Image 1 (cartoon, rainbow, N blue to C red):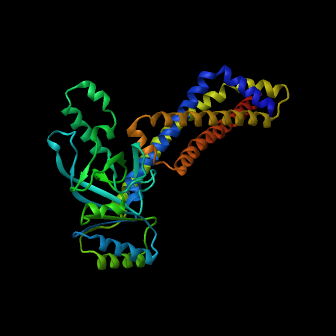
Image 2 (image 1 turned 180 degrees about the vertical axis):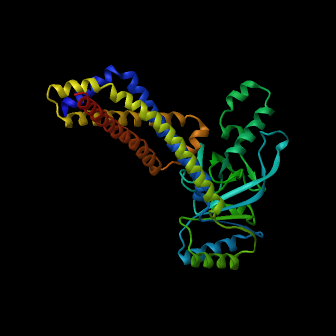
Image 3 (image 1 turned 90 degrees about the vertical axis):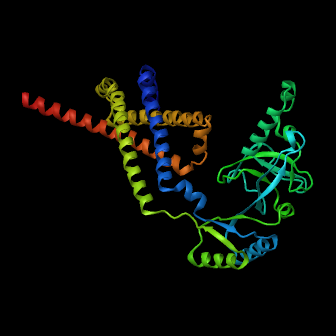
Length: 387
C-alpha cells in the first residue's frame, strides 16, 4: 500500500497540470451542484417554507397589552411549540437635535416576546451589542433606518472635519424620542433576514409603554401544527383579538411541485454534461499510467496492485477536489449576495453534493477498468485470429 501511495504521488508530480485541471473541474462540479440544489429548493419554496411553514400573521384591530398578554397566557396553557412572537406598531419618532429642523416622522416600532431571537434565526447585527440591557433607555435601529438617518445627518453637516469625527451610529444619531416619551439610546443597527420592516426595536416590557396598541402580530412555531392544534390556536386568537386579516402558513402547490421537477431535470442534465467532461479528463489521466502499469505487470505486479493504484489516484483526486470546492465556497462568501444564500446551506446540502461528484469519480474508475478489460479482450481475440 505504501509503495502504491508513493508511486501515485510521483505520478501526480509528473502530471501536475492534468491533475490540477481535473481537481478544479471536480471542485467546480461540487460547487455547481450545491448552487443547483439550492436553486431547485427555492423553486419548490423551501426557502420561503423554512420561514413560513409554521408562521401565522395576524392584523388585529388595535390590540392592547391586556389582549396580547391574555393570548400569550392561553397559548402557554395549550403547550404549543411557540418559538417566537413578533409585534409591531406605527409610532412617531423624533430624531434629536443633530438633525435639521428636529425631524419627526412615523416609523415601525418592533418587539419580540419574550426576548430577541438568536442571530442565526432572524437578525444580523451590523455593529454593537444585541442584548438590550437597560430596557427603559435603550433601543435598536434597523439597518435601513440607521443608514437613512446617518445620511441625513452627514448631508446636514458642512464641516468635513466634523463628518470624520462622527463615524458611529451612536455619535451621529444621538438620542431617539418615541411618541414623546423619555429619550432612548440606540445601541446597535440590525439587519432583518426574514422581515421587511424598517424602524426601531425595543424590549417587550417597554413596547406598550411607548404605544397603546399593536397593529401586526406574527407567531412562529418551531414545527408545523396539526389540524387539531391549529383549530385550538385559531380559536384562542379569535377569543382574545379582533383580527381583520390573517396570513396562514405556506403550503406547497401543484405548480410549485411541477416547477421543482422541471428544475431538477434541468439540473441533472447540467450535472451530466459536467460529469462527461470530468470522465474524459479522468480517463486521460488514467491512460497516462497505462505504460507504467504495463511495466509493473511485466515485473510481477498483481492485478490488485493496478486496482490499488487507481484507488490511490481516486483518493488524492477526491481530497484535492473537496479542498478546491470548499475554497470556492469560502471565496464566494466574500460577496454579500452569494453569502446570503451560502449561509443558509445545511450539512445535508454539502453531503449530497459531495456524494454526487465522488460517485462520478468512482464511475470514471469503473469505466476505465472496463475499457482496459475490453481493450485487452479485443487485442487478444485479434491476436488469436491472426495466428
